[in-house]
Image (cartoon, rainbow, N blue to C red):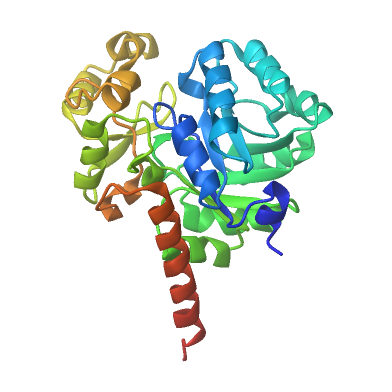
Length: 314
């Protein structure tokens, strides 16, 4: 048995990233119904909105699903209380110290997974008592680690050091990518960008179309002085690069960034002034598809690639 399918009681070791402005209950329930693990992205939801999505997700699927919680969230205590009250069984935490909430969550019967970008933080998360690690390479869209470790190098290094189940993330959108990550030592994969370009994603249609149109080299990691984030090179991105020529302070960058840039871009569809967060693998995403089709395609390609690998000869 696969460690990830066992841990979450799912059919396939595929997790959908809990992306802000993309991951509502429709996406999460669709992924779970297709045999993976769907995640609701709490990072772009007010507490009561999150509660509503959890309740709707329960009605939309009888399969396991989880919630992704960035621990820098301002209402974190309220969020954690809602997770317990609504009897959420799986929680992914990120962007913070796993020691802060892991014990509380596990005491309430919740399986805890923590997202890291380095071996150092993977070991800290394991020591904090989490059940599983997501190791994410900096190919990933959205907020990233500062080390800029690629998935290809990060996964085997983390695997060498930890004993608990490991999920690979960053740059994975196909069955071949899934097989490659698992060959490197991962027990399963987390995919974000591929599910962002799905019918069920809550992102604006303009953003989904932009994902499909994005080519190799069209994204870049920026805002490292605040929190590194991978963005599509749109007008806002270009304006930001121009602003950098003035050697701005972190405070000046925050002022330039303003509020709700990600919402403006991904949820409201402003392709010029919004923040468009997507991974490098967008260059390999050519269509907007239903979640069930995406999962089936990934599994089919995974099996095909596995057979092809068995025929390698030297």
